[in-house]
Image 1 (cartoon, rainbow, N blue to C red):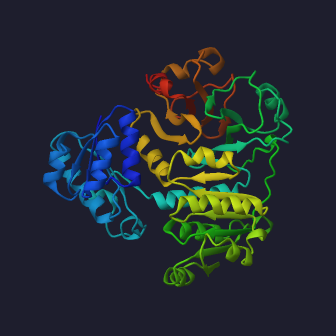
Image 2: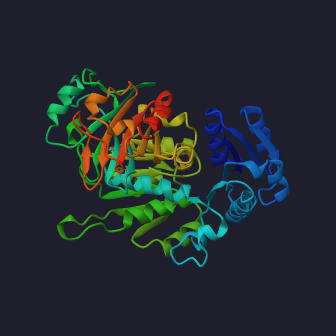
Image 3: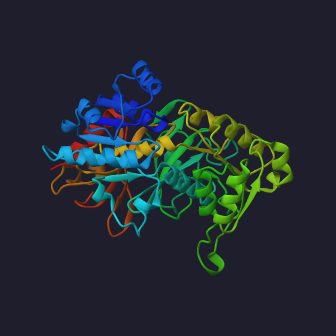
Length: 456
C-alpha cells in the first residue's frame, strides 16, 4: 500500500514509523527541514520538504496513486486542504482514503455548516479528545490500567495488573475461570516483562502480570483481587488541550439518584492567562494557578487527599515524577501522558497505574484502514505484542462452520466475544454467526490469517 503522511511531528513520525515497519510504501511531507532530515535519517521512508497544501508537493509524493493520506500537522486548515487535494486527484483512479487531524469544532461539531465529506475527508481523528476520553474511562473504571471499547461500547478490553497480594497469584487460568465462574469474562492475553503470552488453561498467574480480559461494558473484573471503589476527588496537572478535556469529562455528572456519580476536580495550570480562561470555560472545575511540578504547592492544595492524579503537561518527565510523588503520598490512581513509547511499559513497572499516549490513539485509528474488508476496528495496547480486531464474518466463512472448539484455530489466534443481539463471551461451544461482531486476539504473524478465516 502507498501512504502519504503530511506532517512530521510526533504523531506523523509515529504513524510513518508504524507503516514502514509493516512494509508499506511511505512518503512523509513537512515544511520543517530539520524534521524532514530526522525522518530521512531514522526511518526507511521517502521524506519531502514542502507544504501539504501544495498540489506540486503532493504530486511529487505521487498523490495520484496513493492508497492512503494521513494529514496530521498542527494546523487544521493544512490537513483539510491536503485531504481535499487527495480526494480531487484520487478521482482519476480509485479514490484515496483520507484521514485528517482536526481539532476545531467548527468542522467537527454537530452544528457545523460543512461536513467532513464536503472536505473530502473519510475519517477525522482528534488525538487530544481521544486521549482525554481514555483517561476519563480509566478513572471511572478505577482498577484498570488500560481500557478499550468495542462494538459501540458494548464490550471492553480491560488491562489489570496483578498485585503481589492478589488471591489469584499461583492459579492456573483454568482455576481462575472456575474462581470467577459468576462473571462474564475471557482472558485475552498476558503481558509479563517483555513477553506477550497467548493464554492457555495451564498458564499460571504470576505477580506483576498485566492481564487483559474481555468483559461486557460496565462489568468490573473483581476476580483479580482489585477493589473497584469509585474515585471522588481528582487533580489534573496541566491545562493543556488534553487536560482541559479531562477535567471537563470528569466534572460531568453521570447517572441519576443513588447511582449518580460525579467527581470533584482541581486543575493546575502554570500560565495565569490560560488558567483564567479555563476557569471561565470549565463548569464545576476548580482551576488553580501554579506550577504542576511544584510538589510543595500541590501538597498545600491537597494532593495527598486526592483519589486520583492525572499529569498531562507537555513535559513527560515532569508527568512521571509528579505521578510517582502522588503515589508516594497515597493517591490511589495515577495516570501520566507520555509521548515516548519506551516510557509507557516502564511507567507501570516503577509504580504508575496507567499511561496514555496521543500517538497511540492516532495509530489505532490508522490501523483500522490497513486491514481487510472484514475488519471494523483494531486496537493495540502498549505492553501487548498483539492486536485485538473487531471482525465481521461472511456467510460460509471458515470461522462460521463449527463451534470454536472444533475449528482448531492456530496458536496466536483467540476469539474473545461474539456480539449480536446480545454479548456472548466466547467459550468452546460458541459459534460465530455471519454479520455478528467478533473480537479476535491475534499475534502479529497471525493477523493476515484472521482475515482469511472471516472471508467466504
